[in-house]
Length: 209
Image (tube, rainbow, N blue to C red):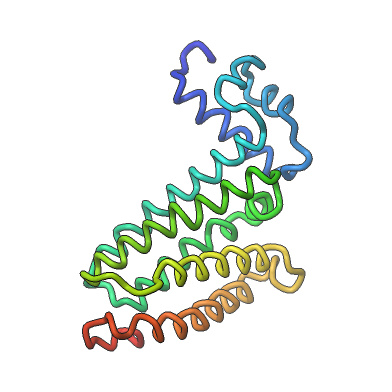
């Protein structure tokens, strides 16, 4: 099987295998040897793709962030979508990074070392946040003062609160409560966004639509 794979296919195969192990056991209970055995690759092959388990986790997280951006980009670009609805969908997509799979959300929230946490922050704030800022300003055809700060605050809050929802005893096993909790986060966030962005909505009161 290994011989039939291209380098890119093998990279994705190792990532998928590691993801399953992280979901099943948690990051702290998975070793490089476990990933090698489960992936059925040679040790040298693993190190051709990843220098450490931390780097593997970073690549996995960046992959999820990229998939999230692919969902978000068309929403921001579509000006027929009211801004409040667009904001809701963007936040829901960001929330899903940590909350769609509780086990993987815990791994992303607590797994890895200092380097992974630094890379996670870069992926969330610099890449995902930066793209949201660019797309939002293009939507309104003008720079929006401190929008980068606003987006960073929102992403941080959504990330932390989705992890909270995935792990808190009163929320983690109750989908209805999680949905209500997410609605509360959105309502709270919309208030702050409305204060900052209303002057850029060209007189349209589409926050309540």
